[in-house]
Amino acid sequence: MIKEQKKITYDIIFEYTFFILVIIAVIFSIFLKNTEGFFSSMLTLITLLLPKFILKKSRVKIPSALYFSIIFFIFLSMFLGKMNGFYVKFPWWDMMLHTLSGIILSIIGFSMYLLLNKLDLNENINPLLIACYAFFFAVAMAGMWEIFEFSSDKIFGTNAQLGSLDDTMWDIIAGTTGGFAGSLLGYLYMRGKNIKIFKQLVEYMTKENSDLIKK
Image (cartoon, rainbow, N blue to C red):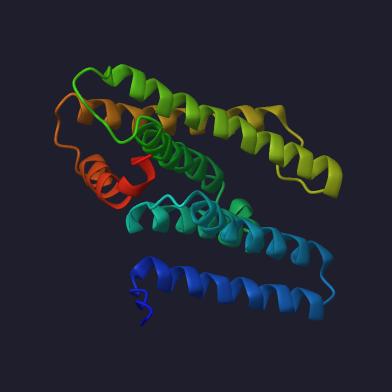
C-alpha cells in the first residue's frame, strides 16, 4: 500500500520554520551558556509541540486556519514576546495577545461543544448555551494561564507577571474581552447570521470528524 503524502500547506510550512528557529535558539543558548534563554526556548519548543500532540491523541481534526492561528499565537507570545523582548519593546504587546487569545480560545470552546454534542447543531440547541460554553471556556483558560505564569515565577524565578496583581487582572480582563467577542460571533452565527469563520469551522469539523461520532 502506498502511503498518502501529506499535503504541504501554509500552516505546516510556518510550523516547521518556527520549529527550526526555536531549535537554533536552543543551540545558541547552550553555546552561550545562557540559562534563561535556554529555559525560554525549551518552554517555547514544548508549547509548540503540545497542540500537535493533543490533536494526534484525540484524533480531532481542525481547520488549517484555526491550527495556524494557534501556532502563530505561540510565535507572537513566546518567540517574539518572551525570547525577543517584544513585551518590553512594545507595552501594548501583552494586552493585544491576551485579547487575541480570548478570541481564539472561544472558537476552540465552540469547537469542543460541537464535538461533545456530536456535531449536531439543530434547532433544539439554545445558541446562548453554546455561546456561554465558549465564553467560560475562554475565561477559564485565561485564568489557567495566569496560574501557569505565577507558578513559573515562583518556581523558576521568572518575571512573567511583573510582580504585579494589576498585570494579572488586566491580562484576565483582556482575555475575557476577547472571549466575549468570539462567543458573540458564535452566537450570531447560531442565530442565522453569515459569520464566515464559524460557517467554515462547522462545515470542516462535521466533514472531517464524522468517524469520531459513529460510536
